[in-house]
Image 1 (cartoon, rainbow, N blue to C red):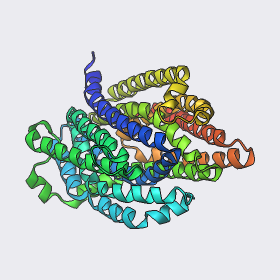
Image 2: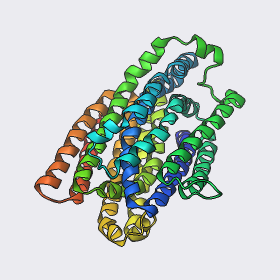
Image 3: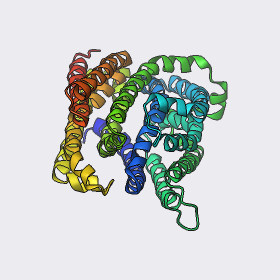
Length: 438
């Protein structure tokens, strides 16, 4: 196997396993709630979408540091790489602290803007307020995620995912249903279990950083963190803000879709959340491959090696298409079985069969956008991805509005809009990637 493939796998596999474990935990969380009441699925879908919009903004903001550190590693400048990582560790938790207070006190206002029904609103607000303390550790997690990735040492993320997810599943069983003498908390128990598990997982990561610090060649020492100047952080933020805004725009588009769904039916957002939960299982695999692509293509950019850059992205594209094909085959053969994991309502299952097949087909366009996009970002051009996402957000919302309210296609119109948007951007982004020259 060629060295670049080994490096891709060394980064990709642990991230994939960690993400899959986390996604399995989220699925079980939703299976528990969905089997209690489909309204809980709507509440979780409505609550987690805007919360994750702001949380993913923080993670995406750190992408600038990931690109700059990878390019510095490719250019054999570890001193510069550590300057960026030290500044990120020192300053990256400022925004999440403000977000913690925002979600604690202003979540009802957000859900009113989203058109959440009075029946679902209290569940959304309670879930969000119980989950909000996670923001206080998000900056730490994002910063060290970059250091693990750029140091090509992501194995601890698997154990982190196991600890967090297994604990979360256990706490869900105890707190949602009121087992072992605990009160039956239902949806509030799901939020509390997730929050506790996130903190326990972060304690493990901190222990790894301290005990195995020699493994992280892009990680700074304590003195370097305290002495870090803010200018390297601004440099990484300047590059990362495009990715953060890109992610924010995608999430705003998703929030707009949920608002449209809330106009159709208070259960529609629950169905949408259920179907896309299945898609996300495969997206986290492709996304982990995208993380590896970003790092290794960034190193190739730093080394000015266009041939290696092309090999990395092309290989990742082939691998991601294999994942998409496997997903489409599985979901097409077992659609009802897959949906029955989330709900026992036969009418919901039957009405969702077409939707789950459509989102599986959507993975081909999504794969291209994730992998080609990672290559474009690794090259250092984050502005392009922001521009295409800005167009995509407007595009998907307008088409969804047209299909739902003019052509009266209902939920099907939303899925048509999502597929068209992903496919169009896939073509545009792939052409842009092919035009890259050093």
